[in-house]
Amino acid sequence: MKISQCLVIADDLTGGNATGVLLAKTGYRSHSVLSHEHGRENSDFMNCDCLIITTDSRAITQKEAYSRVKHAVKTFRTDDTKLFCKRIDTTLRGNLGAETDAFLDALGDDYTAICAPCFPSSGRTLAGGYLLVNGLPLHKTNIAIDPKTPVKTSDIAEIFRSQSKYKVSSLYISDLMNGKHSLAEKIKALSSGGSRIIIIDCITSEDLNLIADAVITSKLKIISVDPGEFTAALARKIITPLNTKERRKILAVVGSVNSNTRDQMEKLWLAQRPIANVFAETKKFLDGEDSREQEISRVTSEVLELSKTNTVLTVTGDGIYPEKRIDFKQYSGHIDILTGRINDSLAEIALRVLRGEKSFKGLYATGGDVTQSLCEKFGASGLDLRDEVLPLAAYGLFYGGEFDGLHVVTKGGSQGNSDAINLCVNYLKSKLFI
Image (cartoon, rainbow, N blue to C red):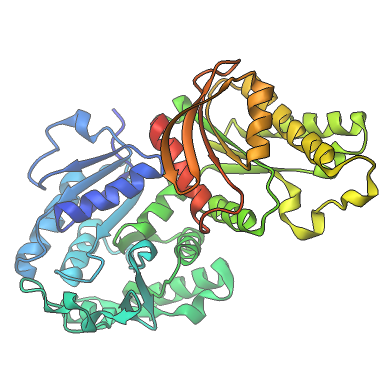
C-alpha cells in the first residue's frame, strides 16, 4: 500500500490543519492526525498524499518538544516520503529551534532545514531577517505578549540560535534577485559550510515559488520549516497525487485583453501544478477561414497532448500582451463582428477539447462575451447558478446542451486582484475533488 508522500509535523492542531487545507486546496488528499500517539495503526488513514501529525508541543519544555517531534518523525516517516515539513507558528511562538533540531536528528546529517516563514495572505513577511505582521515588527504587536508563549524579538535567526544546537545562517531579499540558480548556489554554499538551518527572506508568493525552485535545483535533502505556504509551493513541484490517473481536469478559456487578466494569468501559471498553457494567435482567427481552422486545430491538438500530463489547461488569447493586440482598423466589418469571431473560435477550441478528452469536468471562462459564445457552442440554455466565488465571479453548472452539468466559473476580465483566477480555479478543484 502506498503511504503519504508529504509528512507535516505541527506543534498544534489548528496550525497543522491550516497547512493541511493549503495542501488540499492545491489538489492533494490530506489527513490530519489529532495526536502523535495515534494514526499509525490505521494504515488506510495514512494512505493519502499528505499526512499532518500534531505533537501539541508549543507550550511545553524544549526537551519534551524535541522528544515528541523526533518520535513522530521516526514513527511516521516511510520510504515513500518525499517532502518533510516542520510546521511553525506564523508568529514564531513555541519551540522552533528544538523541534527543528529533532527533525534534523531524526532524518540524519545529510538534511538541511530551509526556513521560509512568509505567509502573504495573513500579512506575515520576512525582510532583513525580521518578521513583520501587517507591516509591524512582530515584537511590537499584541502577539508578543501572549501569556503562554511570548515572543520578545522579531529577529527569527536570534530565536533559532537561542534554541538550536546547530549553525544558523540567513539569506536576504538581495540574494533572491538573480534567480533560482544563483539562490541555489548560495544555499548549497551555506549548507557545505556547516549551516543546518538556513533562513530566507520572503515577502510574496512569488518569493516562495522562487525559493522552492532554488531548493529543488540545489538537489539538497531538505526540511521545509514554515507556516504552510512554502511547503505547499514545494509540494506542487515534487509530489504527484495518488489518484493522478483518475484526476479530473479543468480547462480555462481566456479571451480578455485587460491588463488585470494578464497579471492574474501569470499568477495562475506560477501557482498551479501541474498546469500548461497554449496561446491562441487571435489574429489568425480573422485572416480567412483556412487560417482560422488551422489555428483552432493547432491549439486543440496541443491542449489535448498536454492534458496527458497536466490537470489544469489554459487557452489564452495572445492579446493579453500589448504587442500582440489586434488593430481592428485593418479589417472590414464592425468590431463586434470581429471580436465575435474571436470568441467563437475560442469556444470552438473548448468544444473540441472537451469532446476529445472526457476527463475535463470543470471550465473557467473570463469575460461575458466568451461565456456567451461557450453557451451557444455547447448548446446550453444557460447556467444553473450555485455560488459566488468572489465578487463578480460566479459558479454554476451548464444547463442543457452537450455538456449539461459541466462545472463552470465565470468572471469579468477586469475584476479581482492578482490572485483572482487562481482562487477561481482552486474553487473548481474543491468542487471536483481534485
